[in-house]
Image (cartoon, rainbow, N blue to C red):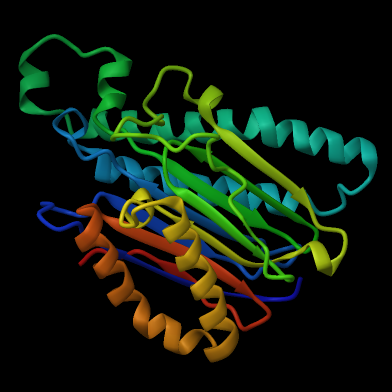
Length: 283
C-alpha cells in the first residue's frame, strides 16, 4: 500500500472548560513501522472528572500495543497463523488494551488521591476507574492488513481506491443521546468492536482512513452529512494534496464544534505520500 501521510487536529467544544479528547498518529505503514491512528473522547461529566487524562492514557496504551501488534503481523499470512492472529485481535488485544488502560488510571489515582479520598473510605476499583471514563477508537495498517477497534461512540470511515466509502464499525442503529460504552465499564473488553480486513491486492486497500470523535458526526443533521464530509475530504486530498487540507482542517473542526457544542477531533491517513507523525500536545 506504500507510504502514508497523516493529518489530525482537535478543537475544544464551545463552552467547555477544557478539551477532553486526545489523539495520535504514528508510523509509515511498513512491516516494521506500522501506521497507527487513535482518538479518544473523555466523557467529561461530573462523574468522570479525570476523563481527559483517561483519554490520553487510552490513546497512549493503544498506540504502543497496536504498533507491537502490527509488527507481529509480519509473516502471519499463512492460514493457521492468520486465524490465530485474528482470534487474538478479536479477544486478546481488547483485553490487553483495557488492562493497560486500567493500570494507567489506577496508578494515577494512587499518585494523586483526592483529599476527600484520603480522609474517607477507600473507593472500590470501579469507582476509581469511573473518574477516567473515555471512549477509544483506533486502527493499525500494515502492507497487507488493516484492523480497527472501537469502544463507545465516534466514527471510522474508510474510502477505497474505487472511491467507495464504508463505515465498518458503525452500529446498526445510530446512538441517541450521550450514553455510550466506555473503557471504565465492567468487563469493558466485551464491548470492543473489531474490523478485520486483510489486504492482498491494491484494489482492496484503503486510500483514506478517517477516525473522529462524535463531536464531528453530531455536527451534521444526519449520517448523510458526515458521509458527505468524508467524501469531500477525499476529493480535496486527491485534487489539492494534503497541504491545503491541513491548513483548512482547524477551521473545519472549529465549525463542526460550534454546531455540535462538543470537543471535535479527527485523525486521518491518506495513502501514497510522505509520512509525518502527529500527536496532540498541551496548549
